[in-house]
Length: 293
View (cartoon, rainbow, N blue to C red):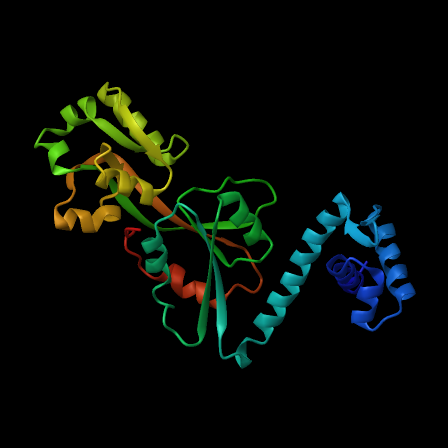
């Protein structure tokens, strides 16, 4: 098995036909067929099945395609790095957790924004999706507030690049000058979702206080928590910087910072022989805690 086999395999998968792939690659159909059969023999599985007049990937073929794509991305990445001195522009591919503060992402990337020699490519998604792309070298860095699990076989490097306090915040009418403990025990609350680290920290705090929260709503997206607080759905457990504009205008009031609860921001990278040189300056730069969505 070699890159030539994989190149032919991808061509047949894209065209759905030995004839079409052979024509596009300027090869004979028999040559393409022979190479595909050699690849299937090496892998021990059929990669295609015929449906009507087309060839479609089998389950094994789809797995092989995922790996082939990763292999060619790695080859492209290597070629790009080795040609770096002759390039006028370099790309930084950034993945960010879909619920992460947008302004935090901007603060992290600010040293590169506006540079004519840099292209920043942003992609959002779930943690699992982003880490798979990081492993496949489709991303240079993943921004998240969830610590990835330490599993055998992973080569992730986790950099803490910021943190922020978390407060109880609400509208002036709901706050009414009452002390923190009265508000926590009596008012409806807008909370981070149960699976988040912020919620776990808040639940532990309430247990220490001996209080049971009255939950009006919960969300795993800071932007939604901000909107719920603005709509007076309840007092929100939220980092003040997320609602900075509302606090400055008086729409919302910060009651108090919650003892011992902070949100941490992480940048996850992979150990690579040829790391993207743009990352070094970003990871070394001081970052603000985080900014609002």
